[in-house]
Length: 209
Image 1 (tube, rainbow, N blue to C red):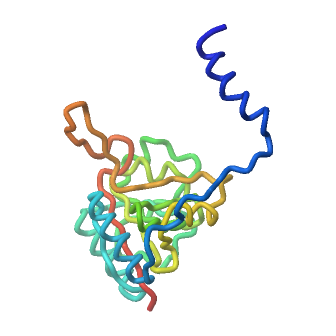
Image 2 (cartoon, one colour; image 1 turned 120 degrees about the vertical axis):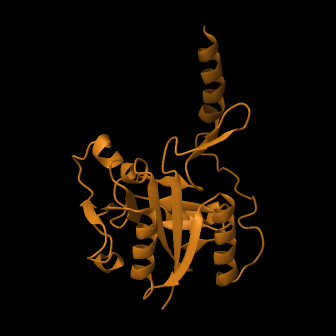
Image 3 (cartoon, rainbow, N blue to C red; image 1 turned 60 degrees about the vertical axis):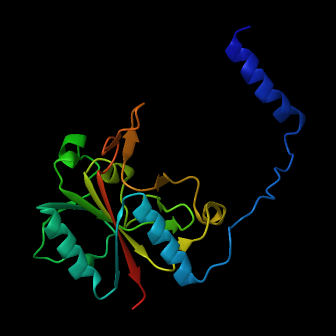
C-alpha cells in the first residue's frame, strides 16, 4: 500500500462511519455590527489595502467616471460582457469589444481594459465575487486583460462576511473570488503584480441615486 492510499483511507473512514453527520457551524458569522454605510466603508478600506483603486459615485455619475478612468488609462478598446448596461459606457469612448466564446487568449490580451459588474462583495475581507452573470461575462475576460474596472452597487451588493456571502451564491456557477489586483511574491517577498490576472484593479462603488 502506498502512502497516498494510506492517506486517502484515513480520509474515507470517518466519512463512511458517519455519512449523514451534521457539520457544526457554530463559528462567528460576522465580526461586529455595522450600518450599511459602515459596511461599505470597511469594504473600501480593505480594497485600498489590497492596492485596488477605489472610486465612489452615484448612478448618474457612473458613465462620466468610467469614461474618465478609461481615458486616464489610455484605453482604446474595452471588453464588455453581454449584459453590461449600455448606458454605463459612452458611445464616444473606446471601441467596445464583445465577449465572444471564440475569442483566443491572444485576442483578449490585446484588449486594453474590461468593465464588469459583480455578484457581490465581502466587506470583512475586501473580496469581490464574480459568478459569470450577464454583466460579468465569462471568467477568462477578467483574468487576461491587464486592467479591470469592477462596478459594485452599494450597499445592496455588499455583505459583511464570507459566511453571509456563501448562501447567496450558486455553487454550480463558476465563482471567481478577487481580493485586489493579481499579485505574487518570491521567497524574498518581492511583490510582482499581474502574474495571473489584471495588474490594475479599479473598483467603482455606485450608491443609490
